[in-house]
Image (cartoon, rainbow, N blue to C red; front, top):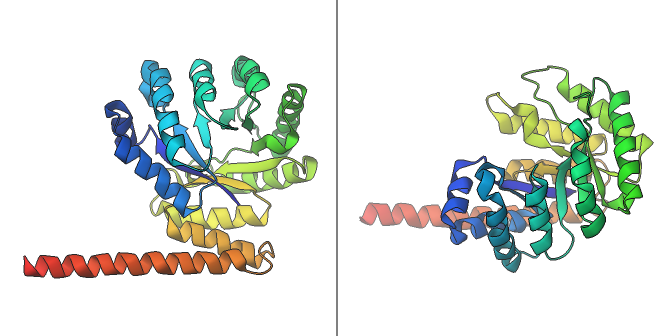
Length: 282
């Protein structure tokens, strides 16, 4: 399972503040904790900085890469900011994400052609959101063909069938799962990805909905997810589901996750125990 850690997003107030103040400690800790938890990429969204975004990317990308051993997922609708980000990124970045709405992808094609990043493409075009799985697959095929013509290997392409909130459309999860199934069948060499937390937008107890949705998506063949890797129960559901689906034949990943989680719990319990002793003495 490819995990894209979602926590370094400037839509989160603490992250935006850290970027504005160049708080290296906070940003490095946020990134490192996600890598330690099992992230394959760290998503970096600086779009809320607006006209300051380009300068922020020039500074923060080298900072993060000095600490991390995994690449970044660069998440911006600004092609100029994306260009600066790709310039300073060492190794192959993940470009998150492109659609063909209003011909958006055209402004990114020269960057894709030159830097050859991995790319997430959204199933959305000039008509807006697709209404059924057939439309989703049609858009995906067109976008994949376009990227292949630009020299991108099909193994470096991720398709996002778009997760819509069930609070807005009660059939949103069903549409996603059917679209995912159709895309996996029609484009078997392409990876699929989803922004898991979108499904629970506007609801209470969002993490419960996210875990249930991710379990279903894994059954339908989801390859990657954008999520919070610090959500231990969400990560546990991934390993348990993969074990049940026969995707972890020796149960190596499952047992490794249990040991890691058990160790973390012991550390946390020890910290809490010492903290309470300290408080009592005080």
